[in-house]
Image (cartoon, rainbow, N blue to C red; front, side, top):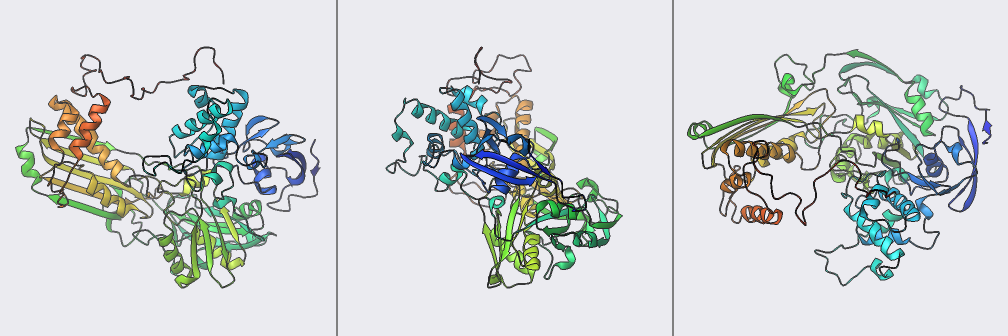
Length: 637
C-alpha cells in the first residue's frame, strides 16, 4: 500500500498529504511523493512531465487521457494515483519504445487522421488496445473499439481508415510501403501529409497546457456567482496571506485602458464595478501550485449589491429594462438592416403567404482542449503570451492597450489549437495572464477546467427568427421578410459581425426582388455569445431553407423544383446590390440531386400516405442512422 506523509496539516491551505508512489512507466521504474488527491493523469503530466496524453473533460467521457495500466486501457482522469502502485503504465509518449512511430501512428499520419490533434493520442491508445485484443477487426468493430473516444474535428472517417490501414499492414495484407509518403502524388485532391501530424500522432506536439517554464506560477480565477450585481468591495487579504501566493489581481491592477472586444470594446479583463453574467472573472490568483491558487481564490471576499437582470432579448429591448451598457440604447448591440424593393407591394401580389417563427439554441463549442495559456516577461521587457488564440493580431493590439505598453513590447504566440471552431477568438483570459506575469516577474500558466470552459466561454448565438414569405403559384418568391433577434449576452464579442453575416446570407442564393431583413443583436445577462462555425449564417440560412420546405409543402411542389425556380442565374443582382457575372447554383443543385438519385415529390408524402421514397438506402448513399450497435450476432470487441 502507498505510504501517506501526514506531516502536512489543514493549516497549510491548498496543500495536501503526500503519498509515495512506485510504478513502472514506459518501461522505467519511477518513485515519487505526490499529493494524495492526484489522479493518474496528474501523476504522469505534472510529476513526470509526460504530456503526450491530454485531459479534455476530467470526467472520463472524451478519452483523450487514455493510457494502459497493466495492459488494460483506462481513462486516467478517473483513476486515483494510488491504484497504479507497483503497476506498469504505458502512455502515448513512448508507445513506439524509442523505435520511431508505431505502424498505427504511421497510418494515422498517412491517412490525415489528425486535424487539431488533441484527441489523437487517446485515439491511438484506444486503437492500439483494439488491435492487441482483436488483430483483424472489421469496420464496425473498429467503431465500437473507439466508442469511448471523442473527436470534434474529423468526423471519424479518416481515423477509422487509419486503423484499417494499420490492421492490414500488421497482418501483411498490405506492404509496409503503404505507410510511406508518396511525394509524386498531386497536392490537390490527394491526402497530403500534414507537417504537424507526426507530433500529433505521438503526443510530442505541445499545446498551451503542456508548456512549462522554470519557476512557473499557476493561476486560478474567482468568478461571479451572480448574473447581474454591483461590486461593492473586494477583500483579498486572506488570499494574500497564504504561503505560496504571489499575486492577487483585480481590475484595479490594470495599468492601461481596460476594455477589449472584436467589434465593440466593452469588456474588461476582470469585472469592473459590475458583474454582468454568471462566470465573469472577478479576481485572479497566481501561486506556487494550482491547488494553492484555487484555495486562495476561494478566500477572496467580494461584497455584491444584487441587481435585477434581463435574460430575454425581446424584454431587454423594451423601455425600462435594465440597461447593461449605457452607450447601447435599449440594450441593442447591433441592428443590421437590408431593404430591397417594396416588400408590402410584393406581398399584395403573392398567391400564397407563409409565416413561421424559428428558434435556434445557444450551443457550446465543446472543443476538446480547454482554454489555457502561458505568459512571461522576456529580458528586454517584452510580455509574451502563448495561447490557442484564433485572432492573435487583434489580441496583441488589444493587450498592448490594456497593459499600457508599446506594441513592440507585446508578443502573442498562437500555441497549437486543440479545436476552436470560433470559440477561441475572444481574449477572455490572456490579459489576466500577462498582468500576473508582469506583477510577479515570473512565468504564469493558466489551464481552464472543463466546467470553467463551459461557464466562461462564448457560445453560438441563439436566434429567434420571424419569417414571412410571399410566393406565386408557380413557386416564384415575390417577397421575403426576416426579423431576427439574437441574444448576444453580456458583452458584444462577435455579435456585430454575426448580425451582419446573418442578414447578408440569410435570404439565401435566390433571386429576390423584394427583401426586408432586420438582424438585431441584444445585450442580456446571459453568457456572452461569440463566433462559431458559419458565424451567423447557420441560423438565418437554416430558417430560410426550413421555410422553403414548408412553402413547398403548401404549394404541393417538390422542394428542389421550388429552389430551381428561385436560384440566382448568371448576371443576377443580390439583395445587397452586388452584380454577379457567373452563378453555378443551378448546376450545383442539379448535380447533387442526380448523385443522390433524388425522388421528386412533395416533402410530406409519407404523412399523406403516399408511396415510400425511392432515394433512401441506395448503393453509394450513406445509410440512415439507426440506434444501437451494428455488430453481427455473436461478435465482440
